[in-house]
Length: 258
Image (tube, rainbow, N blue to C red):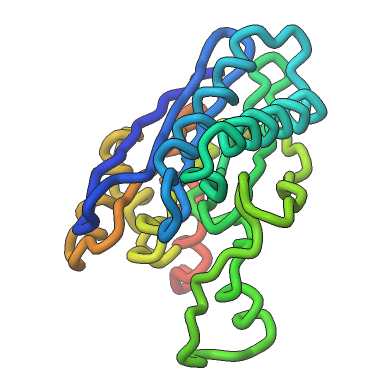
């Protein structure tokens, strides 16, 4: 199974960059992860780096790559972060979001996990197929039908290291198809893009790096107040699957020939 990826991690107008990205890829498995240290509390960048490094290092020595193993690995990340919090009172509340995509290359299956408002997007045949549900007040208000309440709607109710600890959300496993594409990103990235722009960018490119660069360019039209980080992942040939789907879709709207 062919897998290619591209990554970005750049600082916006903030004083520092608390985002961390990482990838591990071999013949058997793959993992793509982003972490965003929770702002307003000391040590966010330390929490993000610790969780990223801990998760990727566990995967290096993994003999049985399963969803259960990745659940245990993320819990181990939480435990390591808790230990680090206890060693320095200054960083006792440091925490981080997490979004991680896991791929079993032998079984050609994928699943993902997240905590907070970093996201995993799944595109199939060029169209958004699934996206994670944010652990944020903004998401709760949206689902309740409220808009523009005037309160801080970006508050998170789940992040690794936060109290009280909450379970990380895991997706079901999916069977991969040639042409699947994924985007794993922090809120600084997705807040400045619509899913329509992501899909449009996917229809316009021939390479994974080009897709990410085009989305990055779209984000750059706005003032990049937040840091923005993302990993784009292509399975097989998404450009061909997207083109074939677009042509078939367009044919449905052509006038009949007589």
